[in-house]
Length: 358
Length: 230
Image 1 (cartoon, rainbow over the protein chains, first blue to last red):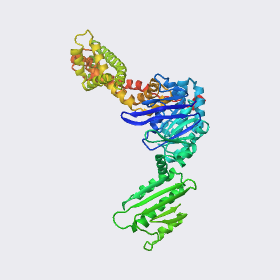
Image 2 (cartoon, each protein chain N blue to C red):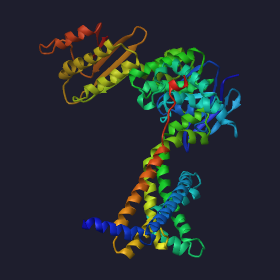
Image 3 (cartoon, one colour):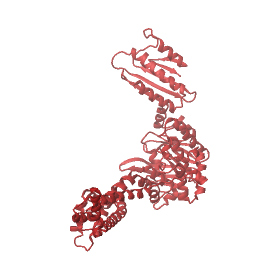
């Protein structure tokens, strides 16, 4: 018997159809990641599972109990199913400890002492025991999210739904939250995670759902979805995740904006700090000091592609122009070239472009 | 010397002669009664209006919005005349009851607007979080929305008490003997307004001050700390 059984689920807001006819079975201990482009209905799908949004059609069974049925004991069923939000949603008038203790005391009738012991156990699990007496406003984003997870775990749910748990966090705080989620999954918690952290999804999930075209477009084990997707749109989506591509058409383009975007991309790929530093240096030298001065005419077109290969953790930068250019002849100033040579392991000339490996 | 003599005479004429201090005392009692009753009833009715404004039923929502708009925009004296000479003219209600009805409605309307904005200021996400933990709508409201909204509205709520107290000073129109009326009566006899005016002002001030302190006490938020349980 599946823990979550979803049958013909559809949702539309007015005339705007979000998704239709979704069928999924989620088994005990499964960790399902839901990925897909923004606006494809991932979060709405998750919110339909615990009826924060009422689906337009279809039914959802939790542990064999239909939550979408008329007059179903919604509050009882929801206690089996925790939810962690992008915006944490801690009760801002309560301390961390009170946040965690509240529901077990008020809904499950635990005594103050029992609830306290349970809360401290949950807070210890997420590394927040020290901060039990803090108000949510005194915490960092990552700490808030960990406290929210503890609040959720204290209800001893069978399933936890994560709605983009790290999207609102500073990059530096993402890891602490992911580590906590990983621990829950490893201990056999059934999880459904909507996420943009592809590497995390790849490492942790038992199944990955790719949502697109108003439904589940492709579903399979992470190895299939991330390394050998079968369908067109999944391929395109995964491919976009692995490469960064931008075309420069203006001489006065924003090098720092470009670098910022590249850095963000590299971080997502878990490139090393050294590589991230080097890729910025390479882009600046190559584009500003070598390529741009050689371009003729007002109209230019330089394609910049950055790729990260997870297999051998090599970052490659590819720059191609629609005009001829050379790396060597630059009116006596070879400083840029020697810098490029110093930071890259290999430089390869291609038709009208150059590829550098970092 | 002349000043002291004047003060002695004035205090005597304004307060002691013909037991005029009793006029002020009974005025104080009436003012207090009108204010407290209107404010307490107004708070209850204000919550009802506030709920009405958030209702899914269009009729209830329209009624709540309409009546509060009317009550908020008309001045207290005009409202009192409308109730005394038009709406409740043919009833046998005493002037005091009519005043209480008027100020209850006015106070409730002001409060409902404050309550509404305070309730709306609580993040929807927190309510959703409570619902997913298994709280019912009512439980979520009382455990999550209400405590935060109460804290949010407190400064305005305290101000509204003072405003209601000030509004009640127009009841002398209906010959209700409140504190303001007492001063008018005494002054008309003594032709010397200083002492009684000063005393009444101080009493109004003290009333407002004490009420604010008492209301502040209801907004104490006590948190459970680790070391208490251990």
